[in-house]
Amino acid sequence: NEYCAFMGEPIQGEAGVMVPDAGYMKKAKEICQKYKVLLIADEVQTGCGRTGRTLCVEWDNVKPDIVVLGKALSGGTYPVSAVLSSHEVILQVKPGEHGSTFGGNPLACKIAMAALNVLKDENLVAKAEKNGELTRANLHNMKSPLVTTIRGKGLLNAIVIKPTQIKGRTVTAWDVCLEMAKNGVLAKPTHDDIIRLAPPLTSTEQDINNACEIIHKTLKSFE
Image 1 (cartoon, rainbow, N blue to C red):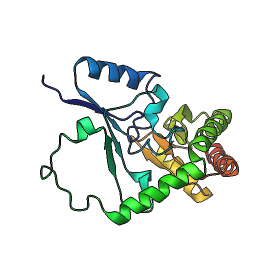
Image 2: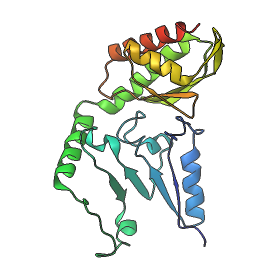
Image 3: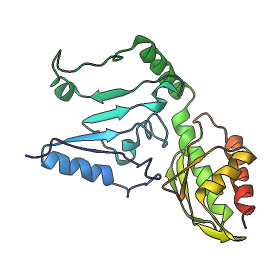
């Protein structure tokens, strides 16, 4: 009776692309149903095709009670977010009980609709799955002593960098990111030792291979 909902990311983004075991969201849904609480999926980072599914929860074949979307909902061109739910849940909020200064912004909604059409028309979800597999295969083939872990789904991936003493100084994920930027790939570290890789869903196979070659070149420069 103390809880109304469980809210979580299908893959933790800011935490460093932490991918749970298969079936995690499915089990969460079962527990929520057992105790009559809502399952809220935060798909702000994982939604709109990023992980090779329109929504990341589809990997577990789960339908949450509420889904939160943002970021990619506009294709990165305009600030917009959305909450998706069933009539049974969303209509518990009665007229006048909730307000939002920019809620229902017509321009934002139109842009979001256009971005979703591009997602569908250009088959970007399937491309994200395919290019994600290519990305991880390329990263694994590098076999860099600086990299301890490679993980991800679709085009949301991460490499974990082991702080390493090289030529009298400690090389960190930040150092690797700075060199990658000089070589033509932009990425940022999180939690000091993790580099997240989230290229545009419109990236081609050649784009992925070129980016991975730059990452490989950068890692080799530290050896």
